[in-house]
Length: 121
Image (cartoon, rainbow, N blue to C red; front, side, top):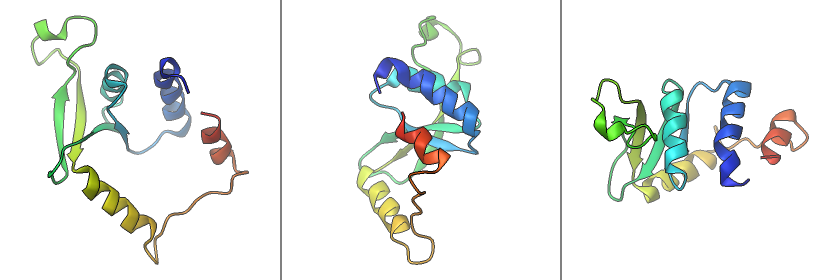
């Protein structure tokens, strides 16, 4: 998918599937991901890899929304949640969950509506 369509398509998917919570990599589409996470603060956090760090979650101010956020006070500046974790630790955790003998990773049949939706992204 072209980057110019990512934010719009992600908004459509959030509206369609109404996730309870999700995490989105903040790079490389930094401005779009900040806007999206700010608009969906209750259901979306951004992810930043930070070597050597355990998982943290902190509220952040949107740094550039095209309206001069640097000149606004913190109360009127949009906010979003930012999760930070060491990349290798995160990958180890994901692999451990995916290969867990009882929980394991479930991959839906490719013919299901959910799989077709994400295949067309």
